[in-house]
Length: 495
Image (cartoon, rainbow, N blue to C red):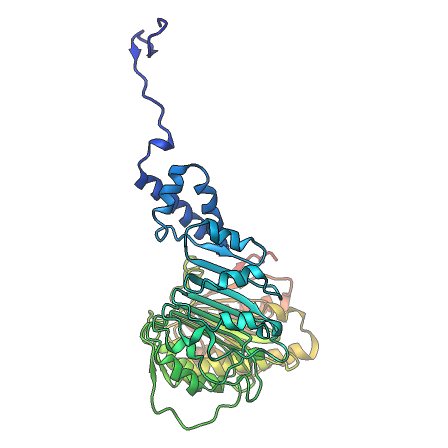
């Protein structure tokens, strides 16, 4: 190739012109904006992400060059640009330097410093607040004054009490001026209240309401189901509702049956922790036609779930096809799914019910689950795959194990599952269920799991020759009764 000539000689000796090298500076502004938005989405889509990661990352981009700064600042809403304020940063300087973007405040320390106070002064720009509050905060006149102002741009409010175990803080009724018209998410943790917070009554667009660890203190922390439903009736956009009482206690339910009901047309997720009497009263006052996820943790020993089943029957789902039952020393739980496929289980858990028990009462777990299954007959009759686990019973021996194995509640537990074709068993519960099924062969084969075709036994250290003999007799008896069954042994799970 001659000097001064541009091009590259190919195999034939002819020159081929080269194109100029493309750089990111050649991209138009709208493409750069798409790239920045892709980076934002990639950060926010991570499984574990803290809200401030993107709010600090965009600072790096705007310092690359003047053009990048111009492109990013031209779309603050599209890129969700905020100023992230904590009690460890130079907030006043940051607020002076950057454009007037929305402000996000986060502080979980026992002392709210001057930086957070400085950010709270801009109450008209604050879009999110996450604060831990102590008694010293409630006595600070500066904070009290600032928190009484109106926050017109606020969309998310999360308050955590640092005194959840004794002398809990009481949330002022006039917090945020009693008005937050754009509020979408509201979360309280450890705060008692007797009436629905007045703040929420003006939040017509509220989508998420989470009340964690409501203290169980008479005349301070108890709010009746009627009071909650009265407040909920105005929240027609609510999609997530979580109510959890501390230690599971939720007061004594009193009063006449409900006259009026609250319609929550958008509610898709409901979670509760407390006693069944409170839950039953609450659910009797609510209609949620779009409900898709129902998580409940109840405290025994007397469990009534009539309203739970009514709500579960109205879940906006297909019939349940799989049930996972777990019996543990201090709790029992049942999880229901729409599909048998293990690949689809992790995506959605429509129904999850936990009953907390007294660990010192052997057999109580089986009895409680039998009561639950008996009351749940309408929603269990479509289940075709049943998985029963008792992993933590492995340490039970002697008298406790005998009580567990001889419990008369076992047949009651299995009777509602009339459509089950596949049964999966693990732990010491294998021999119990196999022995029970063996006793129901011949003419009584249809009394327990009449459609059963396959049993999967998860191998464990707890198995002996007697169990193997029981299994073989059971297989033979089913064949003789014209209801053959296949038994499959699965390898032990790794711990």
